Image 1 (cartoon, helix red, strand yellow):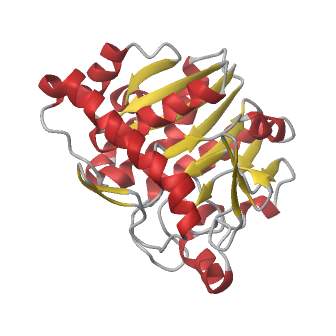
Image 2 (cartoon, helix red, strand yellow):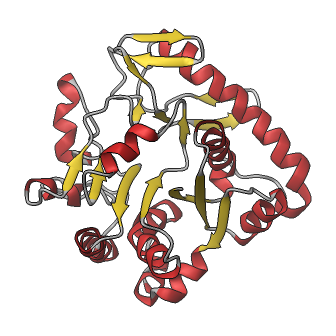
Amino acid sequence: MHNYCSIISKEYIQKGLLLYNSLEKHDQNFCLYFICLDEEVKSLLEIMKLEKSIILTIGQIENDDPKLANIKATRSKKEYAWTSKASIFLYLFKNYPEIDHILWLDGDIVFNSSPEPIFQEMGLCSVLLTKERFKGQNIKLNNIYGIYNTGLMGFKRDKNAINFIKWYRKKCIEWCYNKIIPGKWSDQMYLNKIHEKFNWIRVSKNIGINVTAWNIQGCRIEKVNDDIYIDGKKLIFYHYSGFVYVNDEKFELCNYIDLQADVVKFIYIPYVSNYKQMTYYVNDLGNILLGDLTHE
């Protein structure tokens, strides 16, 4: 059993469901723990009866972690989602003793092939991280946004990982904002030097993991049957950071970087089509319950 967790909200419901569907396609044995930021989203997900998910609310996490709840009013919704990650990990390990590992996934991720290479790496460490992989003149962004992209974080149930999560929780509760100040931004900059201190932290070198707009630039993109290859390496999952819904016929594929034509063709056009279909599905099923959907 592969255990994943992700936060889902009204703004992210289509994206979160596309993530779930991609796991159903590429992972035969998994459980996705959805943490709902909105009660109406929890109600809608329960109506959908997603067989390989467990639906929780952020309120359950807050009841277990009053310090997290106390800072909620000081963060935007996005900032609070970032802040709550570590508290969610601790909650899951505490309340689900059958979990021997957990893999965090941002809601705007879609799997394109089997996640098994990720879990092969997880078997070699207590904590698994991936780099942003900034390129060229963008390498300087490591000092602004961090070396690591926390859209994926993997943890084993062991002493090293639990102590790491507790440290990470403390830092994020102290400060976790969508602001750029020296040495800080969101939950990422805290990790810049942490891997240098501990040999039980592994940084994946698989370029097919956590592929996104800024690290796919300049890569060779090939499609062979249903598989996509990035510089000859099979794409495991793509992270659609910066994807913005404008209206039912207009989308910003990435609102902060230009995309090369083959990336648009092979990666984004299918995602837009699936996103539109998911919007129709959610509206048909839950329009009365949710009212007008708010897209990010």
